[in-house]
Image (cartoon, rainbow, N blue to C red):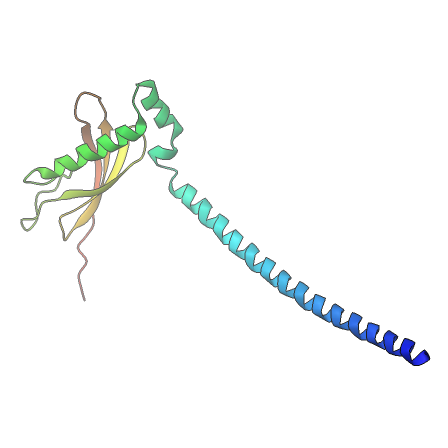
Amino acid sequence: MKNVILYALVFSLLFNVFQFVNSTKILNGKETEVQKIKTHLKSSRDSVMQLSSANYFALESDEDAQEYFFSNNLDYQKVATKVKEDLIVLNESKNGNRLVPYEPIDGKSFIVNTSKILNHRWLIAEFSNGDLWGQILVKYFVSAEKPTEFETVETVLYERQTKE
């Protein structure tokens, strides 16, 4: 009988040691997993913060500009679409978009490729002629009945990159 109790005691001791080692390994594995998730979460938060600061100057996030359109009985999303369409229509001219103050170079006229509406009064656009490119800051005025009026405020034309 003493042997059975001794064997049971040794067995329960070994079982407890096994459970302790196994639990420690599982706990360490979970702790490592939690640290990886925390690191990933921090980088995700940083990315979201960068994105929100990158969109600071955008009609979609400018409540004052949206309120300006609302007070004039205009939907800012429809206005944004109209402004972009009216801007692209100006590309149809033989000499390129009239907002770009540069004459055609090598027979290639400058046209607006893409634009971003910053608020209820300004937009920034990228233009090119296939070889050269630049950006323009444009002031715009919206009217429901008439086409959008545009006025170029400032332009930048980047230098042609030379291959060495």
